Amino acid sequence: MDLFSLTLCQAGTLLKEGRISAVELTRAFLERIDRLDPRINAYISVDPEGALEAARRADSIIAAGNRKELTGIPLAVKDLICTRRLATTCGSRILENFRPPYDATVIKLLEEQGAVVLGKLNMDEFAMGSTNEHSAFGPTRNPWDLERIPGGSSGGAAAAVAADMCLAALGSDTGGSVRQPASHCGVVGLKPTYGRVSRYGLVAFASSLDQIGPLCKTVADAAVLLKAISGHDPADSTSVPEPVPDYPSMLEGDLKGIRIGLPKEYFQVEGLDARVKEAVEEAIQVLVDLGAQAEEISLPHSRHAVAAYYVIAPCEASSNLARYDGVKYGLRDTEQNELLAMYNATRSRGFGAEVQRRIILGTFALSAGYYDAYYGKASQVRTLIIDDFKQAFETCDVIAAPVAPTPAYRLGETIEDPLTMYLSDVFTLSANLAGIPALSVPCGLADGKLPIGLQLMAAHFKEASLLKVGHLFEQAAGFDVKPKLD
Amino acid sequence: MQISKEQVRYVARLARLELSEDQLENFSLQLATILDYMETLSQVETSGVEPTAHVFSLTNVFRKDQVRPHLDRSLTLSNAPASEEGSFVVPKVI
Image (cartoon, rainbow over all chains, first blue to last red; front, side, top):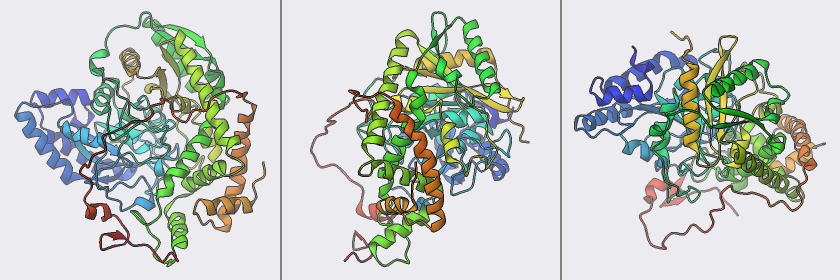
């Protein structure tokens, strides 16, 4: 078996037993990246020297008998998580040469575990996009079909995991940016509860919605990675001081007595592809065969989630992105010798079209005379969406739904049509608005070649329930097809 | 909803963006479409509903008011497009 096709858990066992070395494993991934990434463009930067150095350190830790769960495990990180060693671009020209002076908390946690960071992953600029076409460093391609998008905004992360160019990856999810690309690329993606994982060092897009999450080959791998990055962080005042359960030990058991809620509004969405609907319904049948009870539930305000989200997120973004002014870091237009002109020229040159569109949208919605009608109203609708979930979780343990309404688009299909791209986030946005955890697990292939994901959502801090249902589904469904790349 | 190029130009100025004529044209059409869609929010009955700015209302997260190590000044300035004598340099303001 090729080393790159191992799962994180399998590689961990082999490392622990001394049957492979971290250096060997890291080399296998670096070679794979060299060979495949020119076609896929999942990485913005690769760090062979740093990775091999970390692997050598890991090997001596293992030799000394001090291995932790991630020691020697080659991972990759979405390029909006600050790494002191490596440039952090956010997929934007404006941060092309930005070298963060500090590491994000999740990077520190990975390093404390002795993980190996292979490089930084491509993404829609500032995580704004659902296709990865909005990257200043060129689109990432879907390993299952190179003419299609991998999804976004963690498209590089999903593509890298799907193409075996890393064992697992960290992405970020503001409106579906971990789950939707995971679904399109046939990998597992988890958005944790808001506040579960520290956002310190995660470049902010929409601060009340952003959350870092793992993209992995299996649910068990996601459980290991989630445990490693979770926990309260004094440097992030929105991280929640809840104890971190031992997720990997909570996967087994059965589904007897588990109540699966099926939101009727989700299955009536216009534009839900018949192939997606069928695959998700079959997946629900698998859960029922495993002993779960499926029941219809209602999330009456879910049809307003897209509008509420696309007011709230751009409002927060327009404020967060005010910091890119050509003064403290990033690009500066040096042709202007007056301050205001320098700001304008720097920002207009540095930001791509989708980011500018969202800044304009957010600035408009927050401007005098419009605030109440847009931001105020959307924030009230957000409360109603949260209440819908609270009510739903009184009668069910886990909600099952599609992740994306269709399989992956072709490249270029929505580039001139932002609203269509926004509408494709219809099933994922609500979890961010409500702050609840949600998981995407592969559940089928449309036309035998395009992956489809099953989405599972649970109440705040119930990641263990999601992972257990996801894991048992995965075992029963046996989705083990891989894209053909060699 | 109609969004004029002038409105987009005004908002762009607030956001410190300089848009070309083509962009103004493009954005005013796209924004109109997007804002039309947002209008659906006005159908939702929200009287008496508290707005949510944050899912967990963790308020007043305090820490001790004491001196702690901070980033080295040269490191802080290391990404600045221009710096001099330990400060950021900006174009003339006045």
